[in-house]
Image 1 (cartoon, one colour):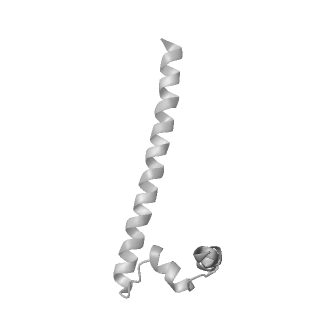
Image 2 (image 1 turned 90 degrees about the vertical axis):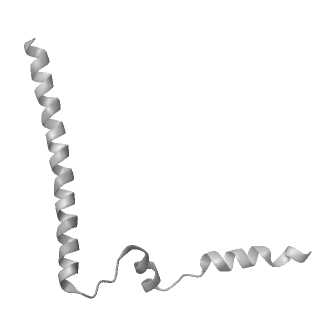
Image 3 (image 1 turned 180 degrees about the vertical axis):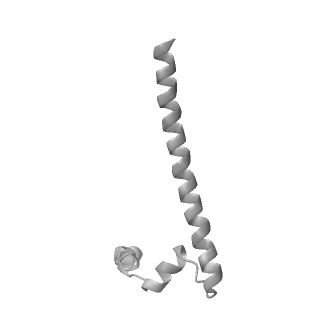
Length: 72
């Protein structure tokens, strides 16, 4: 019965939580310079707007092809 403490060790490892700061550092870069932070935000915003533009163009393309098929 050497492994009798194994389930409790696993449960302890699963239930212990790290601090909130440790979780945030995985997803958010800590940028001290506000100008660089603004540049990153602008680049991200442009990327999102660009993706939305591609989706709109694709939807319009499908709409146009449906009209062309009904004419011919």
